[in-house]
Each structure stands twice: as structure tokens, then as C-alpha cells.
Length: 175
Image 1 (tube, rainbow, N blue to C red):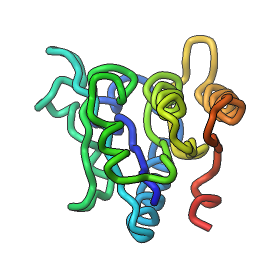
Image 2 (image 1 turned 120 degrees about the vertical axis):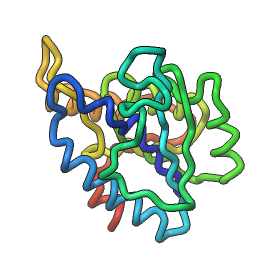
Image 3 (image 1 turned 60 degrees about the horizontal axis):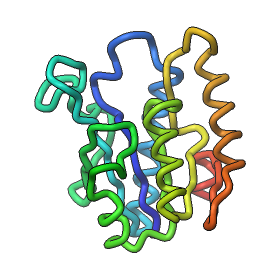
């Protein structure tokens, strides 16, 4: 059974510079989530709890999950306050209780919370699939967003792990 982690796809990300292919990423996450559910997997939305006054402060408009995400009553939500959603949360216990064979990871931001999630899932001994076309970010001062995405897809495919790490597109995962 697959567990899809959708990281920090919240309204607060709409502030600031545009995110690379955001509508496409949301669409692919929705497609993959529907496929995971159809195959009796689970979708877990990771929701960042920011500090008072920031764009992700709990119970503020920016904290809400993006309305374009298609959610289901069976989906779970895990709250975090750090980049790594395993740190100080019950995410690992939830994944163990679900007996997930693979952990698929998508969301925002590639170089912060998505990267931390991929690395922590590997460190927690999961079979991990980073969804190559399912994560986004803004251009950085020194690199365009697409370069950061390509770089992280390559780095993740080269991680040393006791289990497996794979980088695959949405189409590859759904075929």
C-alpha cells in the first residue's frame, strides 16, 4: 500500500514570487492522490504550523490547504512546525500503523520541506518515491526554480539507503 505525503501545499505559498508550474503540480498531485486512493492507499496532507504573524500561522487564511487540492474524507492531516515532518510529530507512527510499502512525496518547497521530508523518510527506513513532477518552488537568487527541481531530483535518486529511493514522474507511478 502506498502513502502519498503532500507537503505544505497551503494558501500561504501564494504570497511572494510565483511558484514554478504551480497549477500543473497541483493537477498532478490531484491525479496521483486519486490513483493512490483507488489502489487503497492513503493520502496524508502535511500542514505547516507557522509562528504568530507569519503566512502559515494556524487558523489564518494562509494556513489553509490550497482549495484546488481534491481531498477525500479518508485523507489524513499531519501538522508540523519544522521543515522535517517526522521531527516532533506522530507521522512515523501513522505510517507504521498504515503499513505503507512505499512513501510517495510531493509538495512545496522543493529545497526546504520536500527535501527534508524525502531525507527523513529515507532515514526512517521507508521505500521512498520522490514525485519528480510533483514539487515546486520559486526561483532562488542564484538558481531558477527548474534548475533547483532538476538538481534535487538527481540528488534524491543518488541517496544511499537501506531500502529504496526512486524518482518517478506522475505518469510513471500511475502506469
